[in-house]
Image 1 (cartoon, rainbow, N blue to C red):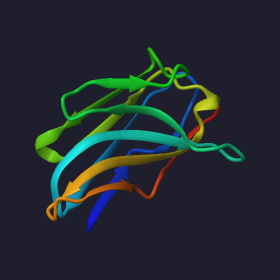
Image 2: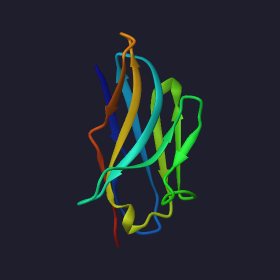
Image 3: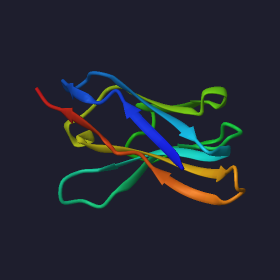
Length: 120
């Protein structure tokens, strides 16, 4: 099995910053794409940003220029630096990883989610 453990969520004022981390562990042969999704109350889960093992990134239009995704392949960890936060960024943020397991199976894993609340 593979576990994704997220950290770094919390309450922040508009204009503030937060950094999310997600560490993958377990029966990992390799990790392909890693990413962050979010789900606000009453809305569908949406992609925030993702990053390939080679470092290519993709962002939702709503976060371009404010959020930065990065990863440390040696630590199987992905980060999301969130700056200039807005109330509309409030959501549960989920880490996602496309993993090739030690049994050479491709599996999509999710973290448990971390709450980000942007409010004054």
